[in-house]
Amino acid sequence: MRLLVLHGPNLNLLGVREGTSGGTLRDLDEALKARAKALGLALRIVQSNHEGVLLDTLASEREAVDGILINPAGLFGSYALKEGLEAVGLPAIEVMLRPSARESVVAEACVLQVHGAGGFAPYLEALETFASGVFTPGKPEPRKTLGRKQDAEDAEDAAPAKSAPAKTLGKKAPALALAPKEGGSGNKTLGRKPSSTDAVDARPAGKTLGRGTKGAPSATELLTRALVRQKVSERLAGKLTASELAAWARSRYEAVQGGLPAEHGQKQMLEDSLQRLTLSHLPATRLSDEQLVDLMTRLDEG
Image 1 (cartoon, rainbow, N blue to C red):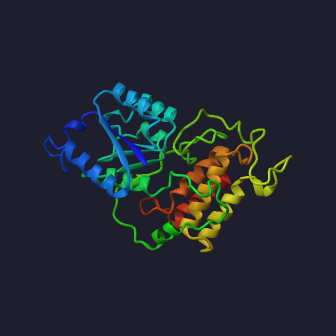
Image 2: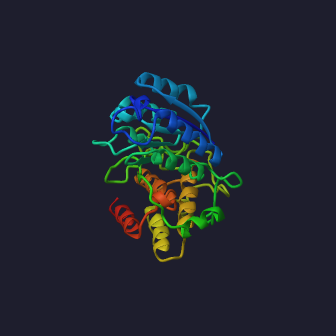
Image 3: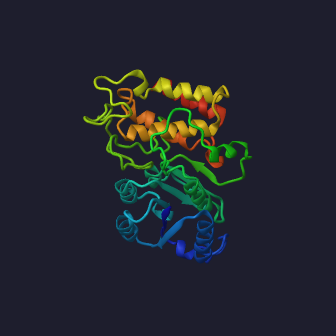
């Protein structure tokens, strides 16, 4: 997997200013390269104090990379960077070496935020999240079936959660407004925020999944809030493991992007919920039982 790493303004002074811990920018880049090599990732790293350079890099590298790791630094309120990330449409993770004093605008175009309290841990955690494969569709079966087990991920359920920088899921909105996506296009990826519309609730003409049945979709072909609530309930009851629920959510998200119809008027909320569940099995973003219940409540209210 190829990643673009963007360092924002003044990070060239990292470790130079008095009271800054964690080393210099050169130390950070060396740590990133070492961890990327161990994880099998390739990095393109750019630092600039100029917003336009960061935007130009996003545009020029969009076809050459599979994901973006960005620390906007003082540009966390940049709508231009937010729109640039949305236009590129690649999964992006926002990292900050310490929590911002204000809510980040750039984070609204990212699927995750990883904030730390000094040191390089947020960057390294973001690399590990990309390397986990959560943003990479499965090669053998792009459209997975319900309840599919992922053997490589099952081991993570038993692993104790380690101390890690705080991760949050993109846009901090009450209705789980997590980087919603336009429907229908197969090249859409997690993390892109579309124009505000739910117009593509129905399957596009000529697209079918599986048997290609004509006419109105059956209940089994329709993604509904009730179906998502059922799967979360099965997880809470112990009928599904965390990785099984995440695998199911990921398969449904991919199916919706391929044309699977969603409950009328609820497509955005359903996509947001599936994105959150897709990441719910990772140690740093694992959802507690209370958070799963809260998600079910929000689906009921929607």
